[in-house]
Image: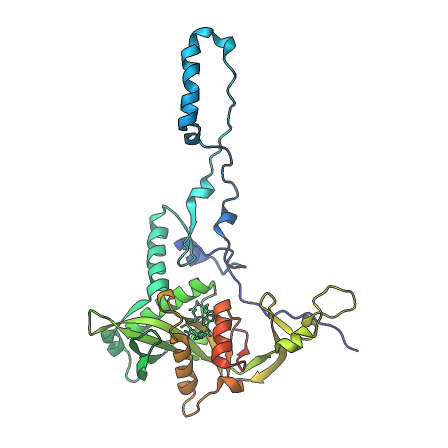
Length: 341
Ligand SMILES: CC(C)(COP(=O)(O)OP(=O)(O)OC[C@H]1O[C@@H](n2cnc3c(N)ncnc32)[C@H](O)[C@@H]1OP(=O)(O)O)[C@@H](O)C(=O)NCCC(=O)NCCS
């Protein structure tokens, strides 16, 4: 006897809106659902005309005869309409940044400061210093590739670092990972995951200093055991998109990863050696091939002496974002799998 089991994949909780409020970041666990447009926060906005708007040039002109006719007496004056005004604290306090998408409390010094530095990291990336690299344990920072050419010109290098590195490098990586998690509304990677992970960084030389570089891309690669194969579109399309009783939805036999983009997986866990829980490129450096270069570097070096092939199903992503899905399809040519973080 077969029973139809509804499977859902998505376990990664998404905050309703990402707030930079230090108190929230420190204490609250990840909240469900991701971004909300600013308008959602403005439910109590004042729909009445403002005081200022009533003093337009035309309204002032119209009011003049009234002033002149003051002598006519009270009874001759038309009653003026009264407008109920409301305080709407909600509208002025929360702001969602169009660049980094972070929602924060406008006017709160801690929030403003935190947003400013987060936004700069999301847009342009973080600094990397050669001295930080030297402070790391011997052999911990590995140079994977040099003079890697980017599409719009410029060359950079790729290094790999153990994700649980300590010292100055560890502190830098912690800030980087926190920025990425906040940007993706993902929970922080656990210490168990970090212990099994390597971080690949794409570094561009600084135009002003020979010892400073910019981190313009980051891929976290982690050791996993199994992942699910993505169901091809033809397999998903076999299910009619109706709620007709008796007609099975795709979730009857497939695992729904993202129904809005039609991403479904076959439920069987297949042996897969490398998972990619995070991939991030600052917005000013996107579409230059940085993520693809970093993924290729991870596939070549993550397992010592064994080059992994994404087309063969050696690599898996966690639930991808829209851009992550496009990257996954382009770089993995349909062979990338999905695993649960
Ligand atoms: C997703 C992300 C890492 C891609 O980085 P990137 O360096 O711009 O990617 P690449 O330049 O290497 O892209 C390689 C190919 O992937 C595809 N691709 C990447 N980003 C895409 C996008 N936003 N839309 C459509 N296709 C995209 C394209 O085919 C691209 O090749 P092309 O530029 O020649 O068309 C970057 O957009 C990012 O950091 N986004 C925010 C964080 C995020 O969503 N991470 C994914 C988590 S799963």
